[in-house]
Image 1 (cartoon, helix red, strand yellow):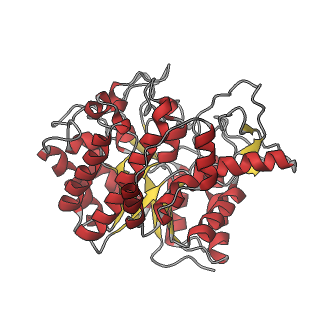
Image 2 (tube, rainbow, N blue to C red):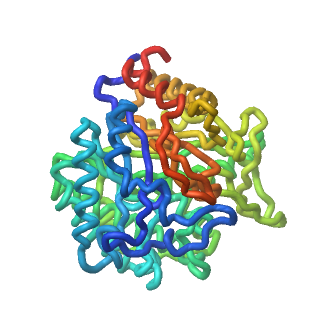
Length: 458
């Protein structure tokens, strides 16, 4: 089966990882601007300097053949303190970026919030404070007012599940907030539902959806205990967020986990009514790999990892290596078939169109003496995953588009510019900004050809 002719072939970035200009033109500070970077990695002051290079970059995206560009809007560029006066320069920047995309026939796909909570809101408790929920709705209203006539596709919150499960790693959870994790999550879910409804009221021709990080996970063995542990992981990592977004209901297995862990959530009937009234038009999700799970004794010590290396939770589940899957250079396992399984599982549960908003390979990219970057490993990774996407479509899964991570090199949270994802190379490293020159990788030309032929050769 061929993919639809209007399939949204795209690529993705996020504001705090690509833009730079962290304190220019009235922008306020976010939690990403004030956090201490991981050892050996740069801060987010300059990044790829997309803020000053956006016209050059969008022209390159056009040459890449993109039909869509998924980017995020920095909350503090629009509202410097998160909840006060609007910054006209910030509104102007994204207006210009959107117009530049449309000039080349590139559909803007806008993420409202991608890990960069305003620092002034963080000072008063961040998402543990319902004020942040109200501020997010205010922020969304400003976006709809200014860009609603030009943006057809909106994403509310990027990887909300990762912010809850891996907040300290990502930089979105402060010490002392651990006991309020699921209250924070509840406020985020309420904010999202309110924004779904607001979007349908203010921009009825637009479509909006959530954007969690979703992957179906495997029991390590056929032991019933491993299967039960996997049931909890899938509920807590995946279905908790999507069940509420789509159905306005809390997943019972996830709630059992939350209760047994001793987390308290203040939920009112009015809250549940709000959750039921906010409906998404599609489900966006990020996929990098699956996890393999086994039962975890309460006597064992907790394990640590990043957002794609499963944490252990004594008494519930533990992530282990899957002996049947290869690893990337950075320790993430590669599972293209798991991508197809995830697509099929999400669609069979919710029957909403799906949009892939991140999928990609972080690797060490080398510039050869002739200026070429031969990232065949990235081409192979993407080829395998797009092949499985097509097979999912053949089974009847409705997929709107595919936006791999990332359009252009940007700062990786844990490895900075050592770990690169882009189709376009940015000439800088963790220590030296160099000239920030843009170079096309081999994968750039491959993806361009794939888009032209709508992946018919795969």
